[in-house]
Image 1 (cartoon, rainbow, N blue to C red):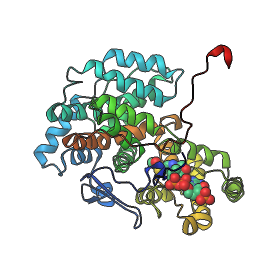
Image 2 (cartoon, rainbow, N blue to C red):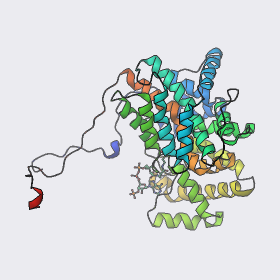
Image 3 (tube, protein in one colour):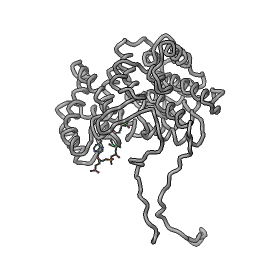
Image 4 (cartoon, rainbow, N blue to C red):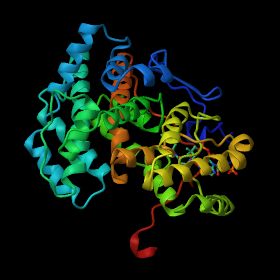
Length: 383
Ligand code: ACO
């Protein structure tokens, strides 16, 4: 490539703005997060997942009557077609729940007459269906993979409460339902992260919403993104006891292993979502049994990581670090952590897609070619 000037490469598209958006502001320096202008702290304290879904999709908090109507719509969409339940039953036995979720969400398009209708109205309707049904799918995966009978959704229950009901077959405690709902609010949206970006890349080809969010699910699975939560819990379990934490962390850092649940492309300070989950963990660390042990190990690991890498490298806990012990407390198995994340992120993915389609442009970045040029084809017999 002699004579050609190398263009500036933006590896990992770091620092690149590709669109305008009014959905989410992530302030990575101050450690602040806002959905549609409302701070995550206020939404976590006062709102719930159904209301936050409305806010993300419509841009405004609903009035009382709008909220009642939206809840009714969401709850009416919870049922799953029998064939989808069959897919979940069949696949859950041998596949990772993220693969099952991906398959089931993509297959949902077959049961939506408007799957390929691209009007704003149809896309809003599909968003409500997807948010609602993703919760049912994740709950059904949790239930059916352990060989139990499918439990039909209960439209009298809140979104998170119904998910726990469908998973366990009994109504959850109000504390468990509230905690899961809070976790879902914290995971509902996070601007142009990897999974949202891949959702938009797919949607920008004018593909349909089911295909777009299926891209998001596939991207979220990776351990550098949503898949970190399951691995972070595994690490806490491997550490076994609080007094082993220092040796484990130092060994990991000496061997240049990434400590899952730490570091972030945008936050170079404490992730505000992790800060909120940490408060829950402080309460859990006073409980008994495995959750107390996990919480105590997590709090020690957090302190050590901040001492070792926090101020020097800007590596702080992210949303995935403390979630494990909270989910264990609620009774959610590790294989469902990332699917839970996906069901929570569905409103964010849909909101971004609806917004991007208002001024859609195909996304097609460039690679700088460094391979050979002008080679002549050599027939097979002469190679
Ligand atoms: N543990 C140890 N060291 C780390 C970690 C970590 N978790 N994260 C980053 N570092 C180090 C890197 O080794 C690198 O060190 P070096 O400069 O000596 O080579 C430096 O910090 C910068 O790391 P990059 O990978 O360049 O930072 P990037 O912005 O690309 O990474 C990422 C962000 C991928 C999230 C990274 O921090 C990571 O791998 N974390 C662990 C996985 C994780 O928790 N992912 C969830 C993120 S939140 C979410 O997606 C919901």
